[in-house]
Length: 532
Image: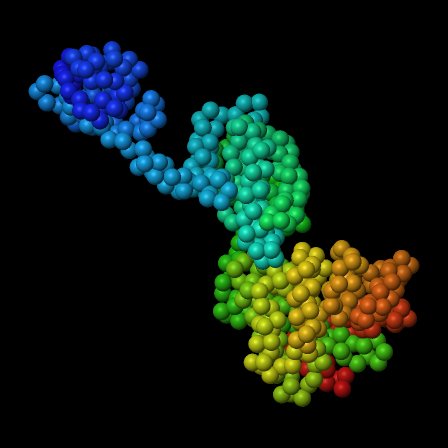
């Protein structure tokens, strides 16, 4: 269309007539702004005015409500006025909007992603710094990390995991105030931004999130419950960057995990050193495998009947170049959260088989070696085949290997655990249930599981000093194991009177400092030779 210097329509083609939704015979010669008063002071108005005033081409894109579409208008000046070329750019605009959405939002949950989160958080921090705080109100960041979520994916599959993430996001949006903000910043990590809040209100909201998680989710036909660890960081009077605030919330979240998970922890400066230590260990793990810093120590197990060796438990140690010999208590949580957990299983199996070969060459026979696996390691794909492959490579009989698992690693997916344990048994590999009595101790699952040995938790053995109840519990466990065709091993035996009571109760074997402390390979050889 063309408009003369008096802003009257002087020309329009059929497409412009259709866009303007008016017969051109009713528009030609009339003032554009009188015909379309709603456009006055719009972007189109300013673009046309600028072109008329400067003689320079103008360009404006906007949503045109009467047609429900986006239009780009380019205006060009000439001696008689200006000419405007229209183009329907609805598809292009929608495509650009989709690209922007994909760049800023998580495709699975619809929540903001990390990039969008940092934009919103940076803006909120800047606004808070410029306006200050009133009546103790502040800006709070909650870092939410789902507990053991990788185990859910491993046990049930990623389709169930994705369903759970979508369900959690939906519940979050349902309880969030309009002024709050939620983002998914990692696989199972979420960030919540609470504006104009207090520390007590932020903690109350965090506990509300945990309550929402505790209610079972329906995912691909399964009812699954989740838990989370939540860290809270508040922007107080001193200005901080968005990155620092998020880092503080992340630090507090790790402190919550260290406190036993399913916890809420607020940040304070004392958390930093512990988190720095964890980060340093996480970084050092990269070198630990390459530099061969891991090693195995072994704690012997002997039969109560004749004190003969029945096997050893392999115990992981990390000979850290600066911190010395570390037990799993110092680093296992960090290791299991790292990408190196899979490599650990391979290393453990190879190391155990290598030691068996080395002892065999020295003429030392160790009846059986037990090694501990986590829930993820037990339920991971192809465990039995991996064990058999490595055992064959080292010419080791599967009957010499025993896999120790804890109760909680079984109940996370009892069906799959039963299947894995049955496959191990069929391959000739024995299994032990570690720390029995310290966890769920459900007789229902114990009846179904093809377990060979129950290991009585050391807390009951320790209590034998002054507790008749502990003695009764131990006798009950031994009787139960015997009725199910299982052997028993008592852990943590340190005193002769414990041996006497365990023997009287019918326990098969013991392990603990009274027998031997954990030994390196050389010391274990000497121990076994002394026993003959």
